[in-house]
Image 1 (spheres, rainbow, N blue to C red):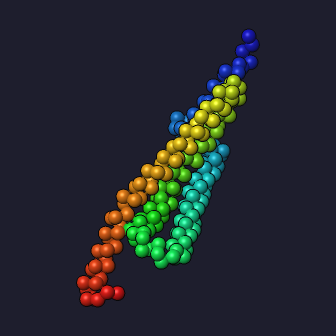
Image 2 (image 1 turned 120 degrees about the vertical axis):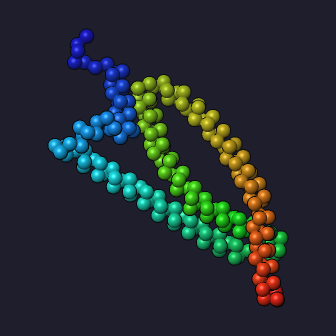
Image 3 (image 1 turned 135 degrees about the vertical axis):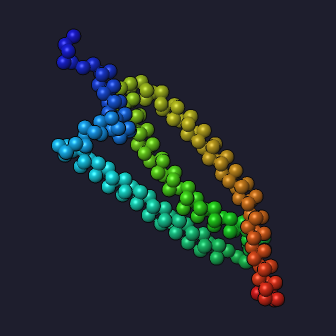
Length: 193
């Protein structure tokens, strides 16, 4: 064979090597790439920093807007409920709904987005490379994806029920807190507000 020709395996190994270097952020090559003579890498690093800042900023602004929209919608719907709802539903359950939903959007959702988006891009890149190098992989991944979809539907339904049960068990704590505040107010004023 000719020494200048490369086999497909060497091409794919080269692509995987480039992905590995990209994920490792060039730890071994950084002294050579960040020399005074290099123009490309500092330019690339500045764009990477700008992209990272913009991604974090967009996630933060998006979750703040989502929390505001959710809170305003919840408040609007609760204020429009008939009075009989407040007689039958404990106040703690209503407060729990507000606090848990807003906590999820303020704390958990941004953290999950920061972890999931890069992994999603890596997954897509890996699937593209594997599908390109081994086309039979597409035949295998389609049934696996369908099975995964059905398992995911069962999982989501189960998690929803567990969250509902957790909400019900947490409601008495908020009800007790609300009754304690109300009782403290009555004791201080000597009359019912």
